[in-house]
Image (cartoon, one colour):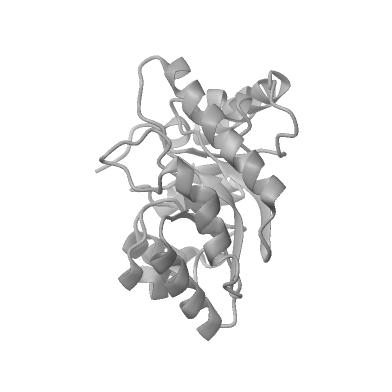
Length: 231
């Protein structure tokens, strides 16, 4: 199957998953982010030609090089961990940063964004599964951190993100996604000032269907679109 075929199939699966949702008030529509780590410019252009409107990058240096060739796509998303010393490279490029996990990082993004006259969209990364190897704040800290950073004038908090563990049985991810949706709903209800809570990023190639069923409106798919990564 071609990249375009894969994208078409995934969109069909997303549409079917939306129809099976049991959660109330889940945000929509669902944005399919093509994860382009280790993919070449030709593959990215093929995905864009097939209707992809957002690409997700894990590494800043790789993204900078691709941005220099492709320029402003409809949207660039940073889905990997962001170190404070790389913020000055990330802010000029990315429409949405998914991986904010501390007040210190948020403050640095705010500072850099202010320098270039930008209001940077961000998500808080929540380590719902409490995995020691994963970045992200604890579940019970998410709303508190949202309030702490809501006064940063060059940030716009848009919602939450998580990365579930990889399970052969993807149904095991359901409680994780359900818990993040509960936190997301509570955050929307709290409505801290200077925020616009409309984005819930969860689900990757192995588990995006379950994530959408549980309320995700951003899914991050790489292998499902491009095939196995090229290293």
